[in-house]
Amino acid sequence: MVADNTPVIIGVGQYSERVGEPGYEALSYMDLGGRALAAAIANAGASGQVADAIDTLAAIRAFEMSRPGKEPPFGGPDNIPGALAKRVGACPQRLILSPTGGQTNQQYVGEFASSIAAGDSQCAVIVGSEVISTALALAAKGEKPDWSEAIGGEFEDRGYGIDGMMEPALFAHGATGAIPLYAIAENARRAKLGKGLDEYRHDIGELFAPFTRVAAANPHAAAPVERSAEELATVTDRNRIVAEPYPRMTVARDQVNQAAAIIIASAAKARELGVPEDKWVHIHAVTSATELELSERPDLSANPASIASVERALAIAGKGMEDMAFLDFYSCFAIPVFNQCDHFGLSANDPRGLTLTGGLPFFGGAGNNYSAHAICEAVERVRAHRGQFALVGANGGWMSKYATGIYSTEPADWSGERVAALPKACNGVARSNDPFDQATVESYTINHSKTGSDAVWIGRNADGARVVANADLSDDATRAAFESGEPFGAKLSVTRDERGRNIGRVI
Image (cartoon, rainbow, N blue to C red; front, side, top):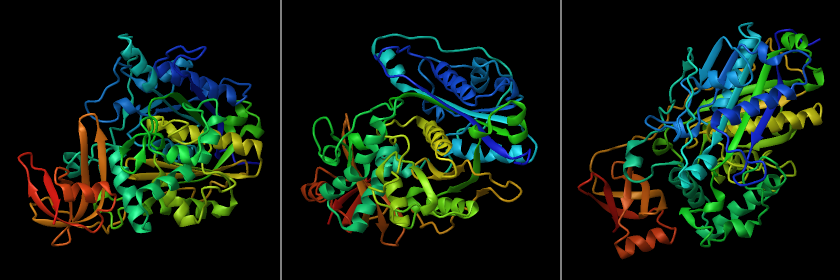
């Protein structure tokens, strides 16, 4: 008999739509999320009323409200978790709006499971939705629906959670979003391997081609098209470079209409609700870790916090990577997957596959909520393959935060540790914002946009401190060094322009 206070996942649900396809309804954030939550309730197969049992509901913050001053274009509810609860007739005593970060939903599985094990909750829900694709399609047609709602009531707003992710020096030099920041880390790994741009792009294609096969078979995928490694790696007008070394097809796709929900209950509540035990999925471990800021990481290509999170989760579960039948590594870009492959000796052609959804560039990068979709897929896999284990790795920021979850129908004993938060490393490299005359390039990207191209690089000044600068692409020698993809180790003379940016030229 599973102990009454054991937390179990009893229901998972996904809902999606693609613009212009049959049945497309142009649903709002809340309506799409409500459909996913209703699907999760139905998925539990309960004879009782699951909605009535929900005492905690956490809404995952939508991508379009993930930082100060950024709001959904057509408005939204004054109480987002309350609006989602309303969609299914639930009245939770506790409502939460999450911070930013793709690791959040996985962390919440651990947090709410711990609350259930402690007797502080009986049934908790995590739900999130993204409708950026619909929002863009409506705006392009000049339509302005009103998605605002007066829900009222109190909820717990956990803020934006972006501390440790906003690096003013990088932002000031044009690395203002995920794509160029990941590209800098990706190029650092390429330099470590001694590979040229074309060879490395082929590596990315080889990694992601199997992902496209999974996406092509997933009814919720935003881009369900199988593609070859060569197609993903070849630069064309349609597959242009967005930030070196990334062609457009190999970066997270944020234009999606996708929602997912997860319901966790105590074993006692699951029995009371009449949820069949073959629906129960046990949570064997959830771990979380926070990384140093990108510009202070000793190895710009590495993400040791993510490795530590995965290793600790495996240790808590008493398993090894070889015991995981199903894997989903967060794949907004190649490098978070490569980091796991490099450490655990995994191949791009691992017969288990490295994604359960199809990955963020192909299934879709549903903002902060992607890993809820991965958890939904993991739950269904282990239900269908009883006794097997699934591992989901969830990433936030620019490899800034990581959370790992391990799931199985095998019972988990919650009398001991199942959830762990790892300490942050304290070996950051010293950084300097003072003017400097020379520096050596460690890594870089050329960030392409509608207004032009900027080469952003991170290096070391004469004192060994980390510095950030742009490369002067109007200088022939400098442009040649950066556009060749081989500026690593180059010494640059540096001046500061009227905007306060550091501008480097090859000496």
